[in-house]
Each structure stands twice: as structure tokens, then as C-alpha cells.
Image (cartoon, rainbow, N blue to C red; front, side):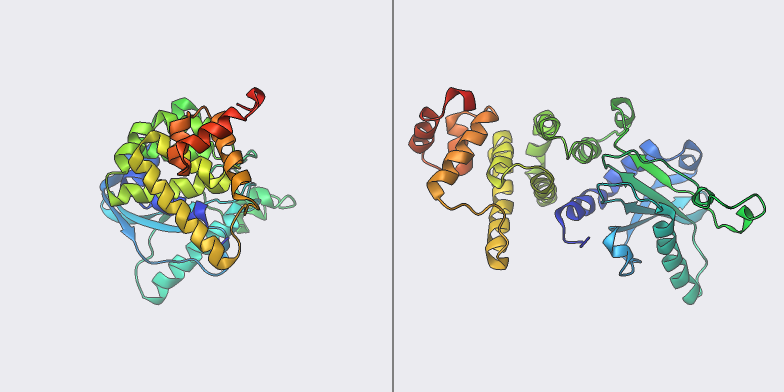
Length: 312
């Protein structure tokens, strides 16, 4: 999976922020580790350790923190598939070996690493030990099987109580977008619940980057059209709507340039009617629809007047 995909951008946009990563780590890492980690020292490492094969699976995010009197690396490797990885240890091990081999070649002291997997797929993720993969291995053979552990943050099974451990709005919003990306109505409720946060985000460049990543993630993981997603952001505020519109316009331009524009319509009039009726189903009134689609209010009202009541 290429790193320029929207979900990859969303992961990088969110978990590259130390405050979000710290919040997730403090909420889900074992207490025994947290007692020794000083998150005030957290620092993003810019080096990448993904080889060509690993780059199909993970976004490379690496952070260092102070651990007691030493330094360790916190490694976050993100699962992007809609299905459970059968042998996650194998891919994680490739990453760890890449890192340690580079340290060894540079004659540096080897650094312990804590792998963390954030999972948000539909199927149940059953965590296993490496030895569990080898069904025929008896007690004499298991000592020769390499073994290590990883931290699993399973958003599929995360409850409201567990998510309440996330202290910042940023982290809670990130978790809820990931958790509900395949459930359209629940996703729309998330935007309603966090409307004020999105409005605040639109005030600065970093926040607009988060809105852009959120727009792309929602657009590519739901069956909503660009116009519908823009309307959702426009309903929050004018500024969030403008940030979403800018992203939508770029998508359109890139789609035309590459010849892959999603959902090209044969007739502008037919497309406008469909978009108006879709937004009407979302409970938006004529002025909001007019602003979101940049259509004359009279045109929107005319379409609504011709819409059967069963479709409203």
C-alpha cells in the first residue's frame, strides 16, 4: 500500500503529533512501562527503516523517549488492512532487524524497541506468541524459536471507558474516526460531537492539515461523495468548509490530470439533483446545501420542490 494513500496521510498527520502519540501511549501501554518512561522527553526520529516489502504495510513512525536513566525507542507500526495480519511478528521483526543492523554497522549501542500496533479493522484480532505459529513444535524445540512481544491497541474492541483514558480531544477524535470509519452514521455523529474542535482546528495551518487528512480519510472510507463530505465540514463552520473545499478541489484537479476522477457524472443537472437530494437526506436545509454546493438558492429550492417526499 503506497504511502501517498489517504489513510496513510491520516495516520501520519495524527500520530506524528507528539501530544496524540503520548496520549495513546499513556492510555494503552502497560503501567509497569509507563512508570519508567518520561514523556516530556519524547522526540520524533526522522530516519526511516522500512524496506520495499515493509513499506506495503506500515507507515514509518519512530519516537525516542527517556526510559529510566537510558534511552529507548518507541516504535509505532500501523496496520492498514481491513483484515487481521496472520503473522504480525514476522513483519515487526523485519522492522526491528533493519533498525538494529543499521545501529550495528554504525558501531552504536543497540537500543531496545517497543513495537506498538494500532488496529481498527472489522475482524477480531487474536494476539498470539511467536511459538503459537508452530503447531508441531514441542517443549524441546520452542527454545529455538525467537520470541518477542508487541503492544496491541485494538480500536475494534475499545469501549467508551477505555477511550475515556485518552485525555485530549485530538486523540479521542483520532480514535473515533479510525474506529467508526466503516460505519457511516456513527461517523457523522462524531463530526457533530466534535464540531467545536474542528472549528478551532481551522484557525491555524496545522489544524487545517488535520482537517484535510480527516476529509480524505472520510471520503475514501465511506460511500459519501466529495460534495457530501464538504457539506459536513461546511455545516460546522465556514472555515472548516473552506478547508474541505480546498482539499476537494485538489482531488478534482488531480483526478482530471490522471484520468481517474472518482464518480464523473454525465450531466451537470443530474449530478446537482443527486447531490442536493443526498444532502437533504442528511437533514440539511436549502441555504446550507446552496452554500456547500455553490449553487444558486433558487436552483436548490427548485430541486427540493420536485423531490418526492419519500426521498427527503
